[in-house]
Amino acid sequence: MVDKPDAKPLQITEGRVELDDVHFGYDPDREILRGVSLVVPGGQTVAIVGATGSGKSTIGRLLFRFYDVTEGALRIDGQDVRDVTQESLHAAIGVVPQDTVLFNDTIRYNIAYGREGATQAEIEEAAKAAQIHDFITSLPEGYETKVGERGLKLSGGEKQRVGIARTLLKNPPILLLDEATSALDTDTEQDIKDALARAGEGRTVITIAHRLSTIAEADQIVVLEKGEIIERGTHDELLRREGRYAQLWNRQQSDTQAA
Ligand SMILES: Nc1ncnc2c1ncn2[C@@H]1O[C@H](COP(=O)(O)OP(=O)(O)O)[C@@H](O)[C@H]1O
Ligand SMILES: [Mg+2]
Image 1 (spheres, rainbow, N blue to C red):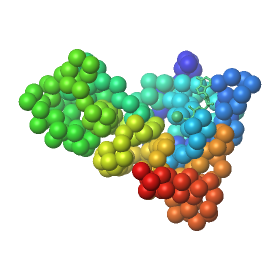
Image 2 (tube, rainbow, N blue to C red; image 1 turned 90 degrees about the vertical axis):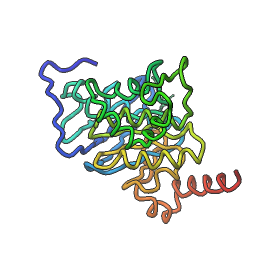
Image 3 (cartoon, rainbow, N blue to C red; image 1 turned 60 degrees about the vertical axis):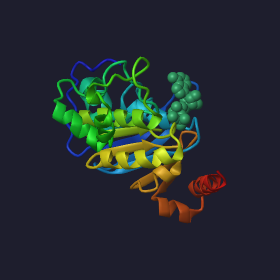
């Protein structure tokens, strides 16, 4: 993707994200998103749920403008993502992916990577918000502990906390969580859920989740099926509807009880 010659920096006012009848396919003969419309008011949390392959992660890739929509538009605070500089676009969006990749370096470096020139105080503040500061200071070498393949092996949950701290340091107005807790066991997931809830305060959050228990409190939940939104509402509204979401919820509840 190249910036338009007259591309301007994205101006964030409230962090409102809008998908306006978005159509998209990686290949021209196979449409993946088939007319998706969605408004996330600034500061609110939307959860996107649906089966594997329904197009959830694709929405995140379009937001980042790794690809352009084939029809419709994607706007942030009224600005089409195709009209703004990619540098400003990428600076506005923080991502916590399914697995945080750690560098073979210190914990400090791994968090500081979120923003060039961050001070130790800022790094610690991000680590506290991600609920990993106490763990770090309990290590003999603290923030100077080497991690990664050739250093201390962190658990999945600890790695995700480092990833959250890294993203918080960037302080983006928009947060994209793509299956951020899917690789974790249920207990760890509950812990990380709290860290993510704190991370989302005062930001617009788009969360993609497989386990519905992590997104029940979202302001809005949309169910994506084969590239179309088939249901939307709050958790309670969708349960009362007794449709697809309720079906997924009930199935996951009985799986949890069986486990
Ligand atoms: N780079 C790509 N090229 C071609 N097809 C892709 C690419 N990435 C994803 N897809 C296809 O697009 C569909 C939606 O993918 P994705 O958005 O990742 O789904 P989800 O996150 O809901 O599991 C899938 O059928 C997937 O195979
Ligand atoms: Mg995905």
